Length: 146
Image (cartoon, rainbow, N blue to C red; front, side, top):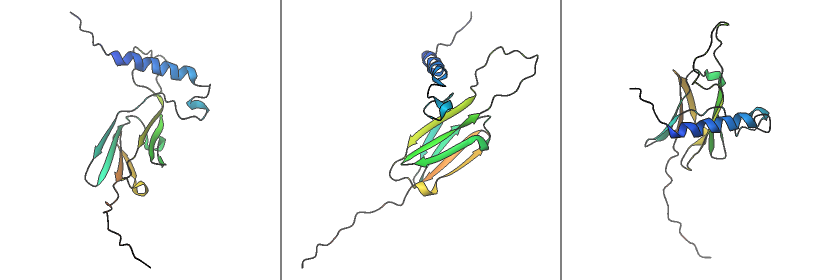
């Protein structure tokens, strides 16, 4: 008896990739608009008492091909994974690992310290550390009279 795994979202993911490939060259990622990507890395976001930590799975992506930027409260992680060259006589039986451009964007809360964001890549995992700003406590303001 053969068991088959049913993943309904994989069909939608394939349609999304095909649509992205069709629109490339008509204002897609290849023409400078970074709203379309070839693949999307998995990301974990953890909130700790003094910081946020974002971990992205980027196996096979060298740190030189990763771009992390922050603009107007939006953290952008983008880059590219190059295809692995194969021997001339090799034929592929199945290709599941996507190559090409990737892009993820995250809105940061007001408590994030945008000036102190740091990123490091180790063993295919990108870790972006976003410190929290010190909490500003409310204070009472006295009203003076003339």
